[in-house]
Image (cartoon, rainbow, N blue to C red; front, side):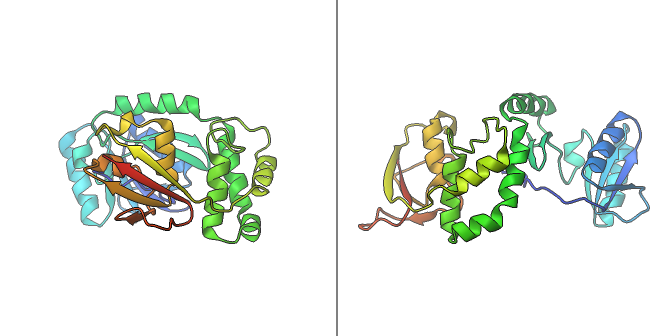
Length: 253
């Protein structure tokens, strides 16, 4: 990754915006929608946006703000910016941001359009329902790994909480999912890696990588493929004689 994607809590916090015109107005709308308070250059702030047409003036403004310790975004000038704004899909509290690292905003917007069509309006309500059920889920499924398996099974493609399938009543769907099983199923699966391109992985292979509990890499498997595995999966040097609980996945070159 060339940049670190993060989501900031702006509610009630001051954000500096320098400039006028539509570019500045667009950033003001985003800040306001996130609960931020727009202030001028001389005020204290946690972030700053510079929307000036003149590149020299924009660079000077960014330097002044950066000297005060602020992170600065200069609109349409990624080389002058400390952080970048992606194309945003808002299904609050679910947010998806697509960035190309400043290379091309047009590609970000095109990807957003495709992803917008995939995400039903109910996905925000689903997130709220799962969040509201956290205490009940902890009581019914005390182990952290148990809850992870519960939600993974429910949220899988075709599952009761499949996020890409519209839900008429997310609260009822979540309640039904919590009545499901969360016991570990010990299994060993292997993916034969025949391409260095992660785009050549099938949906089933990506699903296995995303939910594996332990990962074994055999041979010269490209890093781009390994990076698709679950971040907190245990890395093993070889397949153990006694398999650990859950899914042990072998990536074999």
